[in-house]
Image (cartoon, rainbow, N blue to C red; front, side, top):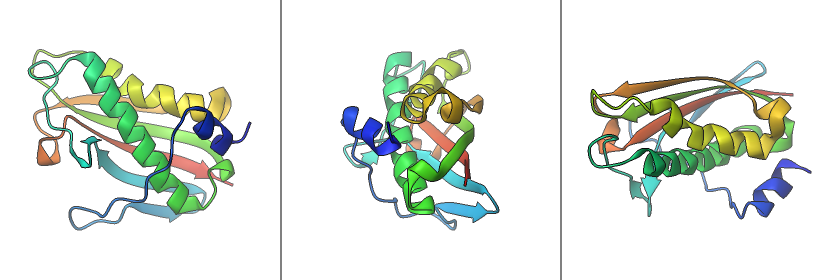
Amino acid sequence: MSVYGKLTELGITLPPVATPAAAYVPFVHTGKLVFLSGHIAKKDGKPWVGQLGLTMGTEEGQAAARAIAIDLLGTLHAAVGDLNNITRIVKLMSLVNSTATFTEQHLVTNGASNLIGEVFGATIGAHARSAFGVAQVPMGACVEIELIAEVK
């Protein structure tokens, strides 16, 4: 099944590329790699504000990370023109706005990793990953994720 067929099966429509909130571009394509700038979690078109371990739990954080993955796929589509040309999702890096005692950043980030794996399959979608707990994310968002992909 093509990537787009899988997205349709999951009921996912790719969003347009978001306008950068500061002095950066949404993606850079160099050689066979595409680097996507960090995307913050959004809910109803606004930053999904919250801090894991204080105002949010792991499951809500996973939903936020999944929402980011959908936004990342929209940006990746804009960057390469056809998601079927992706040969590998190389890496995700996740920043989780969390308290000093919250230790489930890796589980929050699974919200994005699981969706990426489901869309691209085990071979292309399996990726390296980092998940960090941070004191704050821009605009008070609960999660920010960036992505690196390889294209044909």
